[in-house]
Length: 176
Image (tube, rainbow, N blue to C red):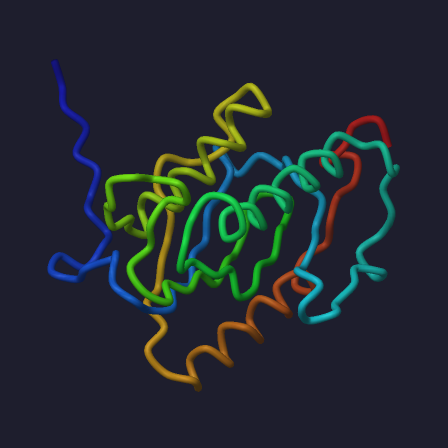
């Protein structure tokens, strides 16, 4: 039986359960358009220049579910976890995830430190389970944010990300 030789893309000696700021990008499987674009309200951005889509479209429903799960990661599932900022695009999502201290599951009697991999894995599993198919690629991309300047550049990149694309609404939602 042939074994998959997936390259490890994480820093080999870095503790991804330690306090810190992480820029994470998760892509949909085969870069399939699954979501309707959205930026977290924290930065007050809208998508008026990106076209229109029916309010009842499946992409909008998927986005509402993803927004809910992102918010629940910090309010319902984990302690000491903060989602600073996020942007949902049709085929990927950007998040700035903050570990304020060692991240724990809410309500767990036995303490265990959760890592970035655990948090991203939970997000991916919950969304895939609710939608009934494998939504995400097996891996994800991360960048450890080490300075305020880097944080500002990443937030700006996330804000400008939707403006760099033209959304094909027919491909996104064939019922348009």
